[in-house]
Image (cartoon, rainbow, N blue to C red):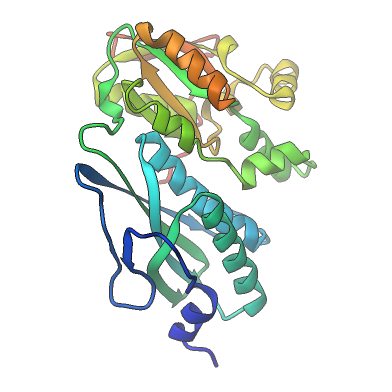
Length: 310
């Protein structure tokens, strides 16, 4: 019977060549160095079976998404991701599952150039907790609290595709490949986030729905906003869905987009357009910040259905 330490050694003790990491997996704690003049940026997310993924979800997809959702938080701060810890709770020792999960996590960490430096394993209902660590120059982080009256509001990418995919699965329909990719393998906007750190006045990643996450910016900044549903960026399938149903709740409240919502002074419009072109990343202006301290959504009179954790 494999014990905890053998499990870690066999599946999660990878070599790394990151010079800032002095001590990684295998000791009581990890050590990594920050460059002078930099701050530590850290974020933690937990994915739970039956809440964040289905019971029959692919272990490869679970590993990728567990990493990606944390990287999206780092991107929203404008920071550079460096390393992460993994706390893995599993109901039993399933070597086939562990092999697929660890292989995908290893591949994904190399894709995004981040390094596993420690964590914990225990027995129980399946859930995965990743704590991501990164760094950013002091006083450069993009916070939620910086939006100002008159700022433009932007979002990256398209909205609602992952929510439409989830709806189709629940309704017994077959999502297309693009929809499945958006739900199971979101791409964190790391390059855009880093490029925005001296441009955006505030930023948040869209994990629980645009309506709710933009509201977090408004509350932190003590401002209001007006957005227009007709300006929301939608892919072909969501466009068709809205056309047929007049239901804007998916792109507004659906969640799981892991795109960035940010604000910026009007004087930065040309710079943002150039960033979008250079990074080949869609960035769309959807509204403006105002002093009302309320969120007005033009073209939508439905109730909020954004994801609630409790």
